[in-house]
Length: 206
Image (cartoon, rainbow, N blue to C red):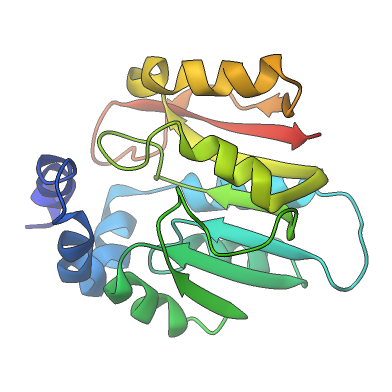
C-alpha cells in the first residue's frame, strides 16, 4: 500500500476528506516516506537554520503543515534550540508529531487562517505542503503575516506545480513583503518513488 499512498492522498486532495485521509495515513507516514528516501525535511531544516538571524532566547519557528513532525526532528538535529510550534489540519498527524517530543506546541488549523499573532516567528517552514490540491498559493500571505520582520519562510516546491503558485509568490515579491534569498538546485526529493523534481526556496520577510 505504501507505493499508492501519495496517489491516494492526491486523489482526495480537492475535497473535505483530505484531513481524514491524513488521519488514516498517520501511523505509517514516516515509514512510507523513509522507504521513498524523502529528503525534504532535512533540506528545509538546514536552509532555515542557516538563514535565521539571531533574535534571542524567545525565538520561535513555526512548522506549517508539520504532519508527523519530520521537519521538527530535522530542525532539532540541525541545531535549533528555540521554541518550535507545529501546525496541521490533521489531528491524527498531530498525535503522531506529539510522540517526537520536539514541539513546544501543536495546533490544529488551516494554513489560510492561523490562530497566532502577527510576526510571532523568526521563521516558518513547510515541507511537502505546497503541492497538488493541498494548500494553495493564497496561504503564502498568511505565512508572511506570522513571520516577523527579517524572518525567513522556507518551503519545498514541486516544479511541475510551480506555475500554480507563481502568481502569489510574485505578488508578495512585487509589494516587497518578501524577497527570495536562496533557491536550491532542482533534484528528486522522493528519489526512490518518482522522478518529480523539487527545489527548496527561502524568502526574507520585510
